[in-house]
Amino acid sequence: MFGALVVFSIIEMCIAAWLTARYNTHHNNLNSDLRARVRYLLFVSIWTIIFCSAYLVMFLVAAGSAFAGVASHFLFLAVTWILWLAAAAAITQTLGGSLNCSTQIVFVYCGQLNALEGFAWLIWVLLTFALIAVLIRGIRSAKNGDGYSGTLYDA
Image (cartoon, rainbow, N blue to C red):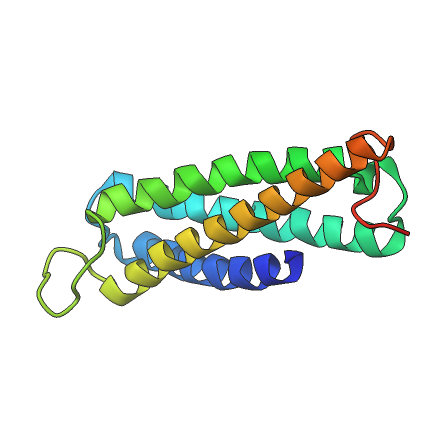
């Protein structure tokens, strides 16, 4: 799951970075809200790449440590889930839902903005599934007497 989050976050980062570079170079963003929200998506995607990669490595290298435990994963995923919900909702609100690129003439880079919105919601859905999986694992860990600092797997 974290591997998929990293891959889709890299795609999101590339789109957001490209749009940010275009807006900075050509100053053709519709308004400052759009530019700020694209930059926020750039930040959140970089956040996700860094921390998902770190948790993936921790899970593979030090699976029994407290940093790789259920509580740590839940805290990270909950914060990241909130960040992505805010990012996806913000870009959706700015675009008015989704853009029909064949009929709209207001937004430049219509296809890229649609992709940015779509990948933001996709990442949020993946985070939702990951959060549910970690929550279920945490409940099982607590029932087994390991507490919430237990591992994400049964040895």
